[in-house]
Amino acid sequence: MERKNVSSGSPYEKPIGFSRAVRIGNIIAVSATAPIDKDGSTACVGDLYGQTKHCLGIVVRAIESAGGRSSDTIRTRVFLRDVRQWQEAAKAHGEIFESIRPSTTFVEVSGFINPEWLVDIEADCIL
Image 1 (cartoon, rainbow, N blue to C red):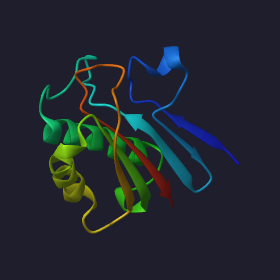
Image 2 (tube, rainbow, N blue to C red; image 1 turned 180 degrees about the vertical axis):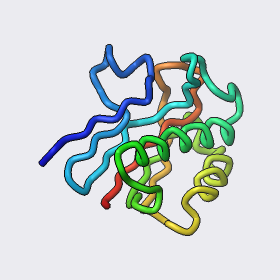
Image 3 (cartoon, helix red, strand yellow; image 1 turned 60 degrees about the vertical axis):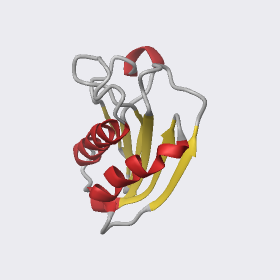
């Protein structure tokens, strides 16, 4: 099967050695997606809802670049610095996935590469 690697231009992709998304056959896997702006800075500093929307925008663009649609998403994983604020992330997630309703996990983590990041999101799709 042909492999398609998708880049988002993140400054972390090359030194870490990963792709934003990988498609093989009818499967797309989207890597953990942090709230990184095009200039490499953190988007929406201090705003969990805004960061979640930003991450989801990157995720959806990656899915589309791999030849899929957001409706092909079967699973998302939402990693939060503070799970007590889950409703802010859930609101943004619901705005994209309310009608799709993928399997979803919200989990608290102790931290991210950049301490300004409040959320990191993964997605899996089957076309």
